[in-house]
Every structure is written in structure tokens, then in C-alpha cells.
Image (cartoon, rainbow, N blue to C red; front, side, top):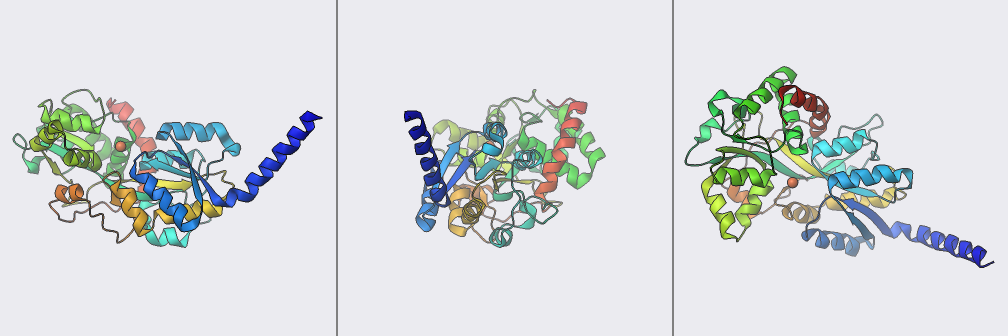
Length: 347
Ligand code: FE
């Protein structure tokens, strides 16, 4: 008898949860910035919908979604980099959706390629540039102001870069492949490997520090890592920033490679309406400022000015030319890029 009443109690609890579910969004997030708290409480204040957040890194979130399958409580997923978002799409973790608000706010090149019925698997919500940092006393800007020159023999033994198969590089190389074609991209990658100052190791910040330390003269990094050093009060970070200069590559040709952090509706959401509502909120001007500035990124939504001092300083207050190829195509290219990396021995 006690057993039976326990079952009844569970069923009632489940029914209670179901009737309240329109007031909750279960968020799986690979972002972990203190400023995100304000972002989420802003959504709750505006809509009455609570956010239940699960934080992990990108790989952890994807593994968890796969393990949970159809039983997953996730409604919205936030991931970093088009290579990972593309992987999530290819693995069937996302529910493609239509939203006029999102389609109006986020430029077409910063969202996934639509599926057959017009649904969009994921949306970019902030952008970052993959830039070149160099030793300002030893390197001429003219020798490093294109991605192509990273593979030019004149830069032999000078380049530091993290692992070739890290998502940030898979995406950059996928973009280069989109611009110059497969054959030239592979030849270029071979050139980059020949120019390495050391075997790839560490993250983007480590590459910037290696330039300051004289271990290499040229490095590749996402813009926000440099912005973070520029905004740091630590003397050791200031010393690093003093030694390096930054260039936004390919201003005279196809523009600097831009990547995204973005969001998607979870494939097995039980609450598609609120999931879309939350993504729409993240694309609103107020949320875009929080979202982008929390990690020194640019807003993805049209017409939102970041007003971030480090980002402004990085370009001397000037606008720069960014590439306009579809980020969905960049993600799709990463599969071929990985095979190229294996062939040219880019670890
Ligand atoms: Fe990062």
C-alpha cells in the first residue's frame, strides 16, 4: 500500500511539473561568464520564465545530450564556434526552427544553412575575429596582413598556433577553403606547418604570450583573448600587450575570418515555444550587448554597437572588413579540413 501511494505521489508531482513547464527554460550552456547572470535574470523579469542552467564545456554538453537522447530535458543549447555548432547539427542534437524575429535580427551569413522545410538549426549570437598578433619590433605588418602569408616561406620558423584540429582552427581553415578552394587550401596548410616555430601546444592566449616571450614572432588568436589581456590590470599582462601588435587579416581581399558563439533549440525540447522565445530574447539589442561584452565579442545582431573599449582600441576605432561567406558552409568544410590536416601532418 505505501508503495502504491508513492507512485500516485510521483505521478502528481510529474503532472505538476508539466503544468508549470511553460514557465521554465532548461538551458545547457558552454558559456560561463559572470555577466551572463544579469542576462538570464533580465529574461525572467521580462517574461516570468525561469532559466534552469546546466554549465559544461562544449564537449561535455554534446556528450550529455547524446547520452540523454529523447529523454533530455534540454530546451536551449549555447555552444562556441561554428565547427562545434555544425557538429551538433550533424549529430542531430538540434531542432531546426523558424522565427521571424531571429531571421530579421541575425544576418543570414551568421546562421546555419536552412534545412529542407526552411527551419534553421542554429543561430550565431556573437562574433569573434581570428586575428594575427606579431612582435612589433621584429615583424613588418605588411608581411602578416593576410592569412595566405602565414604559409609563405618568408615567415619560416616564426609562427605559433594552437592545435590544427581545435575547432577555432578547423573553422579558420574551413573559411580559407571556402575562399580559395580545396587544393590551394591544402597547399597553404602545408606552408603553415613548414613555418611553425614550435609544435602546436596551448591555447590562444599561450600563443600571444609566446610572441611576447620571443619564442615566435607571429601568432594566431581569437580577438577576445587579446582583448582580455588588453583589459587586464596585471602588470605581466600589460607587459605582453606592450610587446605585440595586432592585424585584422585580408582587409584588401575577402576580409577577416569571423566565427560565432551561438544557440540552438534542443532536438527533444518539450517546450519549443519558450525555447524560441529565449533565443529571440538573446538576439534583442539589450541582451546582445550583455552577451557580446561578457566575453569581449561583437554582437551578431544587425545594428548593435558593442561600445567595448578593448575592441575599439584593437582596430584603432575604425571599422574593419569581415568575411561574408555563410558560417554554415565553414562548419561543413571542417570535415574535409580535418583530412587535409592529417595529410599535411598538422597536429
Ligand atoms: Fe575560446
